[in-house]
Image (tube, rainbow, N blue to C red; front, side, top):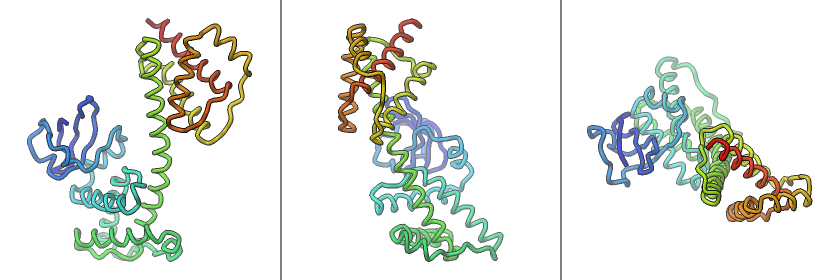
Length: 278
């Protein structure tokens, strides 16, 4: 992995072996003069691909010690919650901690309320928040009021909900990438992933897989149209079957005729648009 830009001593912009840009966390990785080749990947503790502009902005705005502290807290919580947290919690929690410290030092009379109801509903997250408060106090030497336990608890709770959504979408994205590579291989074409027709294909596949995952059935025009298209485009039909087999590996759901028809229509549309643009 190549480290190309220092953000702080423990955070840097990198390029992986596939040429993808990412933000990496790791003790001391930003300290050497950049660019340089990082050979010991065990130093990397967290990586973030396709980070939004908002989070990239926080990297430069937030104090280094607060980012590092937040990363330690999230790492601890990830272990306790079996990895069920959205990794971007590192940034939102750091932003919250930094704001809380500013509020405590500037507006000493402002206090967050502690919620016993939240503590009862989310005992594990509350216990983690209590540990986080101790870590914050040790790092900053500031006495943090009890109400902050509730605030940080809710960060953990909300991040778990975000994780479930993002994990599902990450799986769907991986399936679509594999489908695209299969189409390229079987039809001997190169798909431009920045082109409008591919984006349309991507969105159709995205929502198709979401509906499939939720158990919602697709209703099409029946077996007759499928039979007609199979005779007209036998290679597309065989490819649609292979795509279905690929999806089965992820979801263990057998395709219906209507779903095969749906796949054929969109694969064929992508193929025809690609051939015309050559």
